[in-house]
Image (cartoon, rainbow, N blue to C red; front, side, top):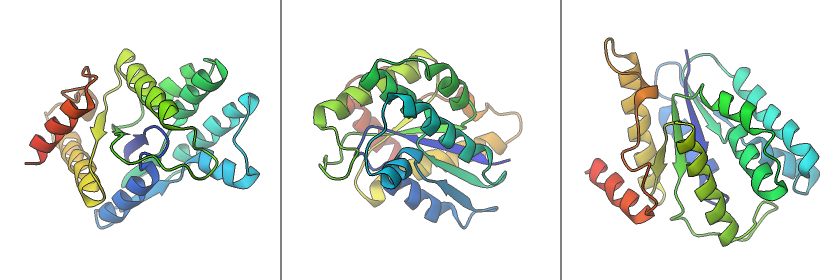
Length: 210
């Protein structure tokens, strides 16, 4: 069975870069690793615009179907999940109808990584709404994950440091999940998930690495 990782975060926080780097790092593991690209990014590239309210459901379903049809073994790295589409629909269009499907789907992941806001915002491409929008999305994402008791880890750092932080979490939880008579990965909680201070989270993660 594949070890499923969802990589979530606001715009311009390095989700795709991290997913690709992790796929490269984990490719040498038994059964390898698979990276599933972000459906929203693919949609925007195809249509050369951002989606409207009535088009959100199809994007969420495309992301969901990609996971369902992925290889059944190895590491599965999902570059976002339907939950991000649900939050975008909520914040941009005041449409909360996608939450039930997205939240139920989010439960299949063994680990959810949330990319921190320590990467500089770059105003390029079609999906760039600005710093304030990025902060609002980050807050809403964490709020939704916490409200529905969905475990997550926040990843910080630049380049290789960011990849190393995420890789440490993945490999640790994969080992725990495979070990007999030990807590499953779904029981794990990021120790600072209730904290709203990103500097506090960053310090805690740095201490874990050391």
